[in-house]
Image 1 (cartoon, rainbow over the protein chains, first blue to last red):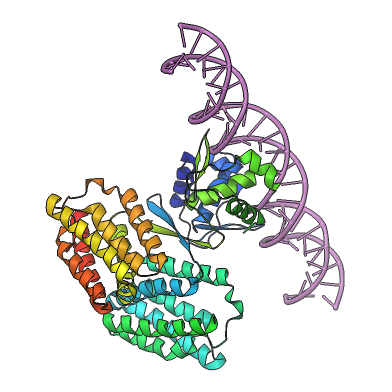
Image 2: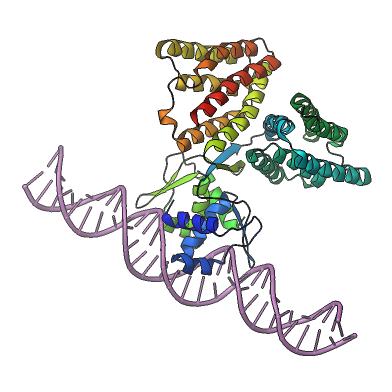
Amino acid sequence: MSGAMQAIAEYIGHSNLQPGDCLPPERELMGELSVGRSTIREVIRHWQALGVVESRRGSGTYLLRRISPETMHLPLAVDSGQNGLLQMLEVRRGLEVEASALAAMRAGAADLERIESKLLIMEAVHREKGCAGPEDLAFHLSIYDASGNPIFNQLLSQMRESVQTLFGMSRVRVDFAARSFPFHRELFEAIAAKDPDAARFKTLSILAIVEEDIKDMIR
Amino acid sequence: MSGAMQAIAEYIGHSNLQPGDCLPPERELMGELSVGRSTIREVIRHWQALGVVESRRGSGTYLLRRISPETMHLPLAVDSGQNGLLQMLEVRRGLEVEASALAAMRAGAADLERIESKLLIMEAVHREKGCAGPEDLAFHLSIYDASGNPIFNQLLSQMRESVQTLFGMSRVRVDFAARSFPFHRELFEAIAAKDPDAARFKTLSILAIVEEDIKDMIR
DNA sequence: CTCCGGAATTGGTCTGACAACTTTGAGGCT
DNA sequence: AGCCTCAAAGTTGTCAGACCAATTCCGGAG
């Protein structure tokens, strides 16, 4: 809230840094803005908490998301209790269904091309290895992006991330949700056909399988 | 994340502090956890950014929301201005439609009674004053609760709160979304009839009017 | 009892130093 | 030339001590 934060926000905004780029080192920002290093560090921690920036020890601080002084940050806190996985899935269902419908209404040619390329990669990996975790994620992320509303991508990717770390799903069954595989192409075709209702339905089909497999797993 | 943060998180978790209570002063935590003050401060800035804690110079650092090690934090960055409101509404639509459908599937007699009482209050206030902001909110919150999934209530109430404070909607038109009024009873009846699809549709009807009024307002 | 003022408390910032880690590049080897 | 090794430089992470600014607390004056 201090003026220092606003100052650095403008400094970042004016220098056109792209996500992935490295911020100036703390000691340099220190002189640039005429504030102490601790102040710089506290502001960086602030943005780190908000997911705007990532610090790598020994390397530097990197921009994750572009911000301007006008962007609002609304941190949401969610308590995942005992039924956390299933409750999170219900939330995810609401978001994902809406994102698919919006994508079906708004996706342009470039969006469709991106989605299809991810789909093809996913199908290839799936045929070869029997599962395709990261490729499946990339496919869904491209759909979120095609919704034209960046909040869906933010929420859903952060939810997936949090769930993965909280529940430590490293040793998940290799064929987890594998039965949902054929529905992915149908979902893509519904979006390509600009049919929101079909996109909704196909997304529900995919998540129904995920739900069954979660129930199997937590038993 | 650094072990220091985890240490302080547990320290706070074990000492049962209620929201509004004051955390130990930084210099005390410093000795308590055997870490430097700057480390303490950076962790506090982290939680400050996440809305968990608020610092008042000269007074102390106060707990705003109870956190546990299982709490997930989903910071959102949203463009302020006209797109922000509509983007938030699209997210809200996804969540609210799913919550209504779940409520229709799961609501018990007690839930229905609670929802109907909120509906009656809302209708009474609406007939009297022509609008019913807080009462409308109470009605919807009772539906979120009836979904049986507390995450919907957490997310949606926080989103409403953030939108209200950040967009400063104090001088909103008194008849904002007033046309959605009759749909509220229909939504309740759909939930009482345990008809998820109708509940979905009625929720969409309400939010469509909200969308129109937002578009009117930001012009 | 109220009101006032100074002392104690507390968060905010600056400075300097060192540790841990990463990146870089020069030099030597094959 | 190409590759490897390793030391030096650069960067974040942490600690320590000091001072400033705002608030709170408490005892004395009225």
